[in-house]
Structure formats: C-alpha cells, structure tokens
Image 1 (cartoon, one colour):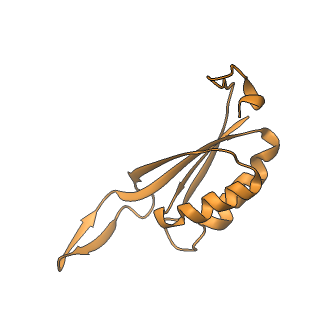
Image 2 (tube, helix red, strand yellow):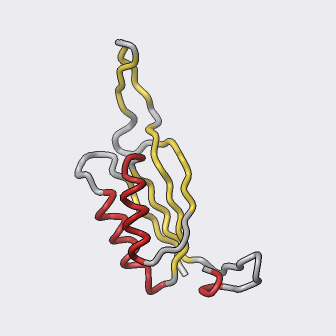
Length: 112
C-alpha cells in the first residue's frame, strides 16, 4: 500500500476529486493548509493596499491506495491539478506498513 499526499491549488479540488473517483479511489482526506515553495509567498491587494503574504493557501489531499492503483492515481492528480503556472503543487508517495478498518477489523488492502 502507498500513501499519496498531494498539495494543490484550492480551486482545483473538485476537478481532482472527480478524476480520482474515476480511477476507483473510494475515499480521501482533505485539509486546508498554508505553505510556500519556490514562489516564497505572494503579493495581494486588499482594500487598495498591497501586502505580501509568506504563506499561500493550499489543499492537502491524502489517499491510501493499493500498489497497483498508484500509477493511475498519481497521473490523475498530476493531469487535473496542472495549470502550468508556479505553485501548482507537489505529489509525495510513501509506503504504508498496514491499515485496519476500525468498524470491521479488516486489515491492509481489504481495509481500504
């Protein structure tokens, strides 16, 4: 099993979610987060005054998938979250040692 963590632009969430549903993803965790990468923040205008923020709002998606689903899931996120402009985000993949469905006691792939 793999844990896929994607940091994307907030307005891309619905598109990414729909693309993931077509790959067979049955659940995900979504968090509103703030951070920065190479862009080092952004300049915004509020009530006529320009100010710089060093933390940019993003969406963090976490999905645990079976190994054979990894390729299609990463590809779906990359293709739908892509805008071609700076700050599109990142996708991280890590190994998951185990999973347990609390309600039934199912483990690993069957718990997903």
